[in-house]
Structure formats: structure tokens, C-alpha cells
Length: 376
Figure (cartoon, rainbow, N blue to C red):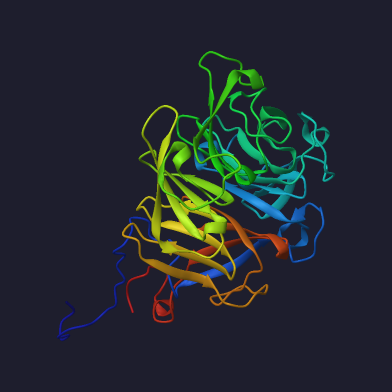
């Protein structure tokens, strides 16, 4: 204590609900546009100068895979996302670049622009660095390598058959999630089911016949809201899945306006339960290390959080729609979410044709702190 000074005061802000410092928080978050500006198109380029066209799925690239994905400038890729019949990347400098697809709807395996997709939706990063993509309009699950090689690992025409990847069928799959062990889960939206894809040990991952598809919850063609094991459970247009650290799954059960949790009970079936908190037309999910579930709600457009004990808070958005950045930001149609290691949420805003981020910000009082964050 300096001589002659009898006391002093200071402010301290302490996180109590999570072990990640800057997770989005109610009344303390900032919505920012990362890429796109509301005008649809397919132009690559820096940030808001790039043109996006109906972006849907997004996946943050973890630091351990930073060397696998780089744009032409050499910058590491921050995230990959599906957009306008393509898979695109945004790097850490904000530049947007197309990885695969030409922008024209179609179906073709191949490399780079020779590969074709039709309304690709969910996207997830596999442990080996490849991407799993729900090619919704083609009723297929595709795998994309960092070098731009695209192969189909499951699906063909619309259907609901289980079996080897070259025999199994899907119906408008929208969401994918991948476990640390490489198991792929699929929200098979138009079938109202959740499917699991596993690679047969020792098989060639480039061949669809090397994968096995099993329906683990729901009954194809039967929508509804029912908890239970396997085919007893019912969903209504599930659109996204997220993997919990303990191996359970969360599902955005869109038309039921609910989040669902799935727990493995056997090799071929999972037990489905319904979360107490109601959400409005959920389309995207992300989980943090503390067990908080972040939800993209499309009607009205909101980003909400459901805590591990079931409390729901609206973090961003309002009853209205718009394209506004800032602490009172607005969205048109938030669709998918992905959580970065820093705690920032990335989200696709479909009809605003933009990729956006949601992060915690300093409040007014904290803004007076110096760069060191301590002395006044």
C-alpha cells in the first residue's frame, strides 16, 4: 500500500457458469458479420465483399487441423460452410474461398470444381480432417478431403433403407455430427429419423461399400413426438445433431419445437428423451465444455442457450427480422451453429446470405478498464 493511502477500490468480473471465459452471454454479446452482405451470389473474396447464396451448415476448424486447410493466400482456415451447392472456407483474415463445387446444382464425385452438390446442408469435421457433408438434395452423405476430393459414402435415391453405404438410402438429410472416434450421426429430416454411419474396420474409406448405416431412433415415414427406444421414438423433421462429450446426442427436432437427447442403449438403438425447455423451430445446435446447449431458432430468429440444468436464455435476436450487427443485432434465418475454441459462436444466416459470429463483449463499466484488465 503506498504511504499515506488508506484504501482503494476496484471492480472484478468473475465467470461462475463456465470454464471458458468469453462464451456468449445474455445482454453481453455482440453479433458481427464475418462474410457476405445480404446480396446473394457466389463471389469469393474478403469478408463482406464476398457473396454468399443461402449458407446453411458451418463447422469451425480446430487448431490441431489448421495446417490441413489453408486458402490460396496461405492463411489458416477459420471455418468451412455449405453455400449455394458448394463447400466454402473463410480464413483467419476473413477471406472467403470455394473448396469444392461449382455453384450449379448436380451430383458428381470428383475434385474441386468438378464435384457437384445439390443443396448441401450440415457439415462436420472428422478426426482425420476430412469433412462429412449432408448433401440434402441428393439424399447422400459425402466426404470431402482437404485436397478437395469428394466421394459419396452413403445414399443414392430417396429412401430409408439401412445397410452398406452403397445400398442404404436417405431422404433429405440435413444435419451431421461426428464423434471423436469417427462415427457419423445424421438427422435424416424427411424420414423423421436419426441414422448412424460407421466405417468397417480395415476397409477403404473412399468406398461407399465400406460403411454401414443403421437407424438408431425414429421410424421412417412416421412423424410425431414420443420418447422411447429406437423405433418407439418419434421426431418431426429433425434438422441437426450435436455430439456430447459423454457420447450422448442432442437433436434439433424442428417441427416439434423441442430439443431431444439420445443415449445409446444397444448397438442398434438409442433412448430418446425430450428437453423441458421449448424452443421455436430449432435448426442448429452447438455444445460448450460446461454442458450448455446453444440453439439457432428460426421463428422468431433467435440464438438461445439452454443450461445444463435446463434454464433457457435468449442471447441474441428479437421478434423482428433484419440484418443488423451489434449488441442488439438482428437476423433473418439463423440456421446452423458451430462453437470455436475461443468461445465465439459461428452461425449461418440463410436469407441474409451471410456468415456471422456471436461473442461476449465488455459491458459499459468494463470498457473503462485498461488493456491489462485490472487497474482503474
